[in-house]
Length: 267
Ligand SMILES: NC(=O)c1ccc[n+]([C@@H]2O[C@H](COP(=O)([O-])OP(=O)(O)OC[C@H]3O[C@@H](n4cnc5c(N)ncnc54)[C@H](OP(=O)(O)O)[C@@H]3O)[C@@H](O)[C@H]2O)c1
Image 1 (cartoon, rainbow, N blue to C red):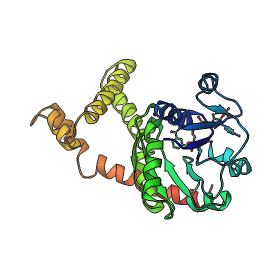
Image 2: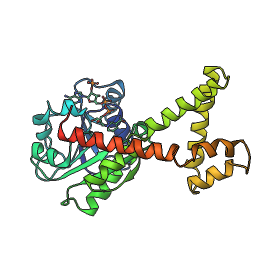
Image 3: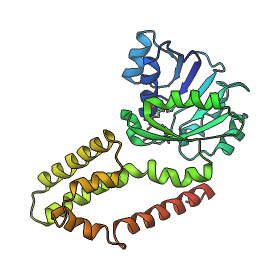
């Protein structure tokens, strides 16, 4: 990566990306724009690994990683970091490619939607981009986002709407599964903290198994399930046609509908 990168906003997502860029060889030329630099950013600055708040000038790549509402207030600052050649990569939720192109005055926009586990390098980031972006540039953006974990796409913004309710919101459903599993244990007599520990460690372990295996999730499920055993008894309830699968289908439907409302500007 021998490009110049301007990173506007260096919180959880910006830091996770920059950590990865700084491990690259050769290191890219990184300028971080942050009015209140975190201790990590100050460390990089002291070590000469990045330039902090230099004079604004167009970069090869501009990465926008501030909160969406903050971006609305600093559009002029962002515009000074790009020209017609700059590839603009936005990880901000809620800003469509078209809206971003209008305010930034360029069509060279890639929209990336990371997920919370991206802050520990285990997220899924969805890509969508303007048609003018070349294959080589998409490959470059994939490298840039690799520190956040897995990168999928590019997909159309329409597909993005459904995909993000699975990859972006998915971690929340899994956290809720932990809560629900612990609550079920409590309702059958376990102490709350003990039940929570079991549910939490169980999901972490299942995630690690998934991570380390090429087998489909169904095969991993079957491996835990002896015929007529205790797991089978629980799964009979969960896998009823009106149970878990249909509930999730309905939940995703609600999420997509809500995203459409938000895109229309509904409160
Ligand atoms: N976290 C996720 O899981 C996730 C998932 C999907 C998408 N995203 C998107 O990623 C973006 C960043 O999220 P995040 O979780 O990294 O947020 P964050 O931790 O709050 O980071 C945003 C950073 O921007 C800084 N900032 C505020 N005003 C600024 C300005 N004028 N110029 C430069 N920097 C400024 C903030 O500094 P102060 O704290 O000092 O104000 C903060 O360090 C958001 O747009 C969000 O929609 C995040």
